Image 1: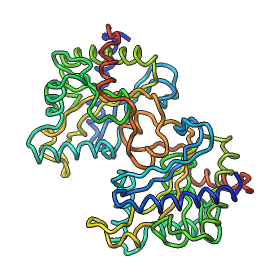
Image 2: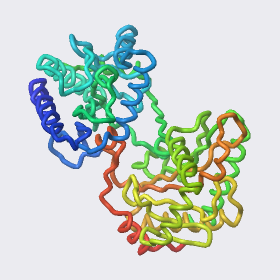
Image 3: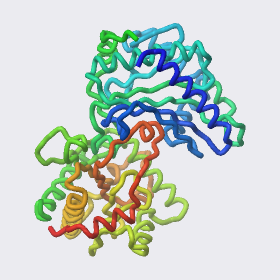
Image 4: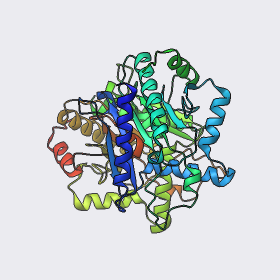
Length: 223
Length: 223
């Protein structure tokens, strides 16, 4: 898919998330994509998934809690700090545009995992404006093309990490807008989790993020 | 493998765990088995893995913390309570022997997941006596044979869930011996985790544990 088609899809994600969040019972709307059988996809045509739940999913909750603790301690967004450090160091950056950075995180769970993070601090994907969606469509299409070129068209997953439904409720925290920073996490499915990963929650990653980023930077990503 | 060979392997697990735990730097010894490529095994011959870490792995910590909270609240071991309930209900039990129960848990993460839990409360696998190891070897060999028959020889993982290294240290809790209950968790790898599971930490399981247990009970498990 070219950037134009990816843009249409991102617009659909945004409008569906906004629509679903009007239902106050929904606490979280998770947008993800499974491409290829190794990524758990049982459907052969291209598709994404949007799953809304009446609770904040466990892992999202852990991520939100982590960001909130960091904010409570530093009075800064952890993702803004990560972005600043990644741009300073540079060796893990794959693509930088006016509004986004795609990079391999310092401590990935999987080899060649990468994140796409907006430079402007914003807690929710669905608040992204037209210019931001347009820029994101180029970054996402280009980064995925690089991954497909570099890794011989692997199965992959991506997940949009956004804020929970912000319909006011008692247990929502007042710093959510400041402490969380939406982003997309992409993982090519190159190896399967084994007993150690399953039992421990720890992940063995044989490729350094610097090597992965260099490999992805060198691969063609014109879209 | 017959029960005799499995017994030898369990004895080796036990002696290796005891030996490794003599090193005070080791906080946890994780014993697991990956069988088949879909279970993440990169080695074709039969093997197990023993991985010792200087920290308690994340997921083990979550399990230990959960058991500890339950004990603090109820003054009873959660696994003893689960066993009592499973034996009372019966529909999720696969095998019951003098010393062990193999059953499909009430809320599994994966279809056909099953646990093997000793009836006698004990926090550590490595404290199991000869009679217990002997009984366990029959239950484990029989349950795996049933799984292989029922599910057409699937890839699978199992993980021994035991107490952390009990060399006394400041942050060890004095109820560990009472609140945790060692057991083995077995998972056939029938489907791959997709974006939703990865992003949410929630698992979609299409088979009820009652159906899974009945299917496993009916499959041949002579060893």
